[in-house]
Structure formats: C-alpha cells, structure tokens
Length: 500
Image (cartoon, rainbow, N blue to C red; front, side):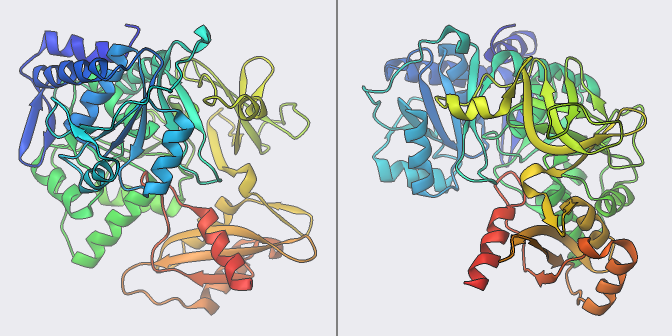
C-alpha cells in the first residue's frame, strides 16, 4: 500500500458489513464509510481540489471526518485537521498558513464547526453533515516531488508558541499503523475507545491507522467525558483505552468524586503517551484496572510513537520502552556528541515515520534537522541500563537554578506522591538576576486541602534545595490542549502577569 485510503478500501472489500465506527445512536460499516469517502472525493474534485492542495478540515471526531481524511488521500490532497473548538482567529491563521484551497466543516457532529461554517458562508455538500467554503483560486500547489508522499499537515498544538505545519507522510502513517497494531495484537474482536482528536497525530496514527490495519472497531467520540468512558468500558466491549496522562487523572478524579464502581469486562490494553508519565499516576491507574499502564514516546514530527513498552514485558518503571521497528534514537549533549549511557541529553530521532519537514518553512526545518537525517526533538531523555528510554522533559522547559539544571518532571514526580495532589506542573520563571525561580502549580483531588507545610517538608526530604519550588500555586484546573497536553506556557504567562 502507498496511500492511507487503501487501508479502508481493503477493509471495505474484505469485510464490507463489519461495523467499524460506533457513535452514540449510530454505527458505520466499512462499506458505508467507503461510500461516504466516494462522495467526499467527488465533492473535492468538483470544487477543483488538485493533488498537493491543502484541504482544511475543521472537525470533531465523527464518521464524516474520517471520510474526508480518506477522500483527501484519494485525490492526492493534503488534509489539515483543525479542532473545531479553536477560535475563529486561530482557524483563520492556520488556513492562511496552510494556503488552503478549501475548508470543510463537520457541521453534523459539531456545533462549533457549524458556527465556523456559518461565519464563512459555507455551503452543504453531497456528504451529509459536511459543509464547505468556496474554493480559493489563488491557492498554490506544491511542485517539489520530494513532498509528494505527504498525507497530512498536522499543526503543532502550540505549547511552545506559533503552530508549525508538520508534513506527515503516507509511508510513516502506514508504517506506524502496522507497528501499533502488531504491538497491541489488534484484531477484529477489539474495540478502541476513540476520543483523541483525529486532527492530531495521536488520534490519526495510534487510533485510526492502527485500528484500520488490525480490523478493530472504534467507539468514536467527539470529546472526552469521564462518565462516557466508564459507560463505554462497562457496556460497549471496549478492549483498548488510550489517552494522555491528564485523561487518566481526570478519570480517576471523576471516579473518586462520584464514588463510581467501574466495570471493564473486555479491557485488555491500557496506554498513555504525549507527555512524561508520573510514577504516582501510573501506580494509581494500574491499581484501578489491575493491569499494566503501557507507555510510549512520540511526537507530531514522527508519525506515531518511536518507543513503546511491550505487552509481553510490561515495565515497573516509567520508561517508554524500546524503539519500534525502524525507529532509531540518540541521546545527544550540547556539543552534538552522544552522552555517556545514563546521562541526560536531547533525544535525536530517525526512521520511516519522520516528517518531511515543516510546511513552507525551510528555516524552521533546518533548525531541527541534523546531518545524517537525524531530527533534534527538543525533548530531554536518557537510556536506562537495558536500553529503555526515559523521557525527562522538554529542553526549553529545563530550568537553570543556581547554575544547576533542574528538570521539571523530577519535581513533578515528587509532588505527585504527596497526599491530595491530583495534577502538578512545574515551570521556571525568570528573575531579575538572570536566575530562574522554580514555581509549582497544583490541582488537588476533589475535596482535598493542601497542607503546604507538610508538602514543603516532603520536598525537603526528597529534593536538593535548588530544586525545591520557591512558590506553590493552587489551580482549579490545569490548562490543556484539545489533545490533553498541559499548556505550561499559559502557566508561565500567569506568573509573568502576576508580577507585572
């Protein structure tokens, strides 16, 4: 196979009547989804969409969104997913950056998408629940043959500033679909709870591509709801539960607040990724489900996870396991040389899932690419004695305090073990003398009260003085992206605003 839509075509031919998508009050078979894809492809062609054109999909998870993804692949266009809950200004900025020929909106499944469609005067299409804007005649196709394998442009979540357009390849998505399906032993008997937005790589790669490859069904949702997760686990034969650490934290808080008694008769695989894994959270999740919480390391710039823990050898620690087939990694110091085993450095990656670059941003691409085809991730990590990868945090989030490097994940792990703490995030705030102040934000469990004196004693027992937070701030709810990533830049902005 060379294009992602061929996965659907194969499934529709092999098992046309098998149910692939289960949404509230509706199911969609492979044959039905193929028919929707046919209609969407005709709509794109009728609108004048050509190969390498960008098609903006303002969407929330639904059957129509997947049909549009597959239709873009069919006609050779590059889908650009945008979460419909973003603001009009954010969507307009991404549409301009993508030089999109067409904007499509999943109005039937998303009230937010319907409002955006109305705002731009979008018109109905032959695919029910989808509206499209007028096509732009001045949008430019891409002449570079090296980019011909692009399947989608994933706009980074903006955790570190202005989003960049990551060009994800068909080859990378197809490769990771095979890898993920094999690692999880996915087959036609599996049902995957699918709330992760398919406007992001976690949703497209780990959820959609793997399910299509293995023949598993998706219990499809447009957003995360702890109550719905519990309902689906108990009554919809969910066998795979995947999400970022914050999802599990919210689920645990809901169970505790409601006094719920979860049932999960078919659940056999529990996975988290997209952020460092706190040991205390891992222990709580494993205690809830009575099985390992698997973990992986991936990012938008690599089509899926580069490292995964294995079902046959679950980890007692919080490592991301070992490299998947084809994936390579190095741990590199500031001088560009590999650091000694066990030392912390920047994670460099290489493999079939690596992006084709940032869309029309040669300077940004050059900033992260290194000789030999290596990608400098900006993430910090180290290799354990057995070669497993431990993710420490972001290079840009590393705090310089009293001349020492301070890694927020280490402090967060210590705080996370303290009684009553639900979520925590540690940031560095610049001081007048050029030093950085360590600040900890804490979200408490429902009904909990923070004993700051006891917490500081706990920190003193477990952390060197320069690592201990100078300030501890309580927060009602951590700011996150639609994909569940903590937005530390918003916390830092809050600190700066408080000072000014």
